[in-house]
Length: 146
Image (cartoon, rainbow, N blue to C red; front, side):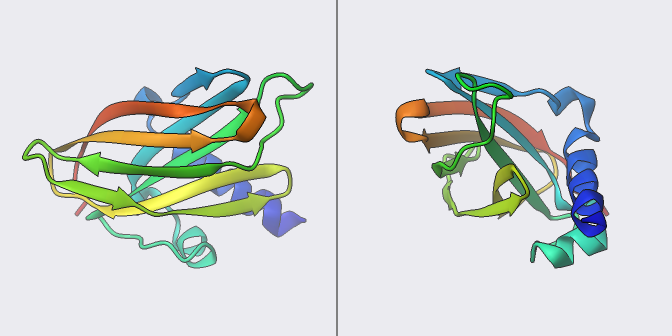
């Protein structure tokens, strides 16, 4: 239990470490889709090993979670997440998401390479069944951590 709490706190801390990206979400029907993208260097070595994530200044992680707003406590729900990123040159990269479950929490993580000051547009499709399904997009600039 202590390990779960520690790893959860580390992931949440990493996700909220950049205040400008905290509380980013979209609402589709009864689903509240939270998302954040950050440089993987923000992860501790322990978390990177535990979830088999690359931890370096040239990699980033997109984290998506889906909550059901129609139920008490807005529980996390299983969903199918797919998407892509596109840079300013129009180069598109498909994102591969892996599901991580920690107790009642469910995260979908996708890793991708970045270059310094790279501006990416993300197009994400969420399928949470009756809870809510649909696309959303957002833009973000990434900075390499050396």
